[in-house]
Structures are given as C-alpha cells and as structure tokens.
Length: 85
Image (cartoon, rainbow, N blue to C red; front, side):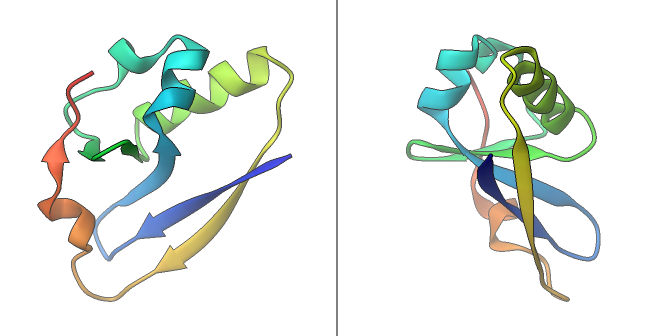
C-alpha cells in the first residue's frame, strides 16, 4: 500500500502525487484547475480530483494510505500554479 501526504489548512486539503503517476494512471488530463502543480508534483484537491486518483488506483487494485498534515494557517500550496495537465 502506497503512502501519500495529505496536506490540510483550515479551508481545504490536497494530496501530493507525482505527475508521472497521474500519467501512468491515465488521468493527467482529467485533473481540474482546482488542483495545483509545482515542478513534477501535483497537489490534488480533496473534493474532486482526489476521488479521481483514488478510483484509478482502486481500478488497478492498488491501495492508498493518506498521511495527514494539518496547519492552522493558509497552506503554501495555495501559492503554487494551478494544475494544467
């Protein structure tokens, strides 16, 4: 079972995933502009894009464990570029 960091601030949350994995899963072009990207890492927003990722992993029979990290401030992820597949 693969572990992924789940970053949360008071208003939202994102899961950190390498873009190459999104490509391998065939969902890189299905990720919305509500997610973010910094270099080769995508931060999938929790309400829609995370579900797409989890469904793709499940379809391959691959388990996912989310490791939560919470901050009481606005996350720096909000300052990254919007995801554009």
